[in-house]
Image 1 (cartoon, rainbow, N blue to C red):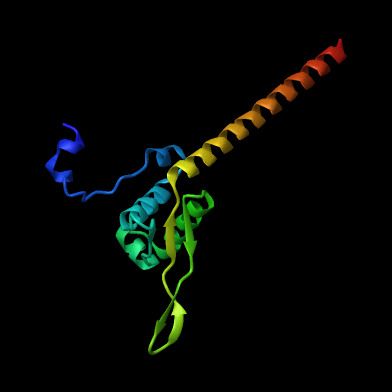
Image 2: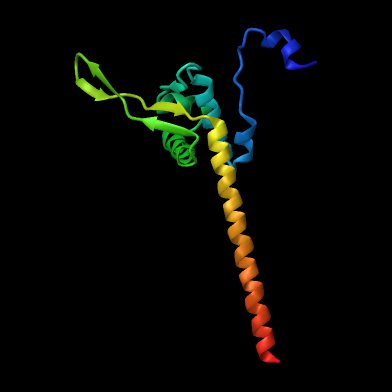
Length: 142
């Protein structure tokens, strides 16, 4: 039975995780945080505003650990974060939660796989140069 036929999924009460993200060398913590952000995401604006303590509590992690994984996801181009401010009667303007924007996985995956190809090409070029050097060195000994 496919999930489309399963009555449990008819209400849309599930979060899809992109297959491409599983091919991007993400660690378990990055996957957990990314999945939680996808869970919170507004499907129209691709943004969400969960607080660090909220994410940490949901994942059973500490705030510094969550911050580390958010930084890693941002450096890999999966998310973009913005600082927000709120206004309160008592304190006036104060820092709010981070605004998370989930970037399109197709673009991120294409960029990631392009980097992987370039890295592999560089390795092959280095191996070829080493082979030529070794061959030249061996010919000089004869």
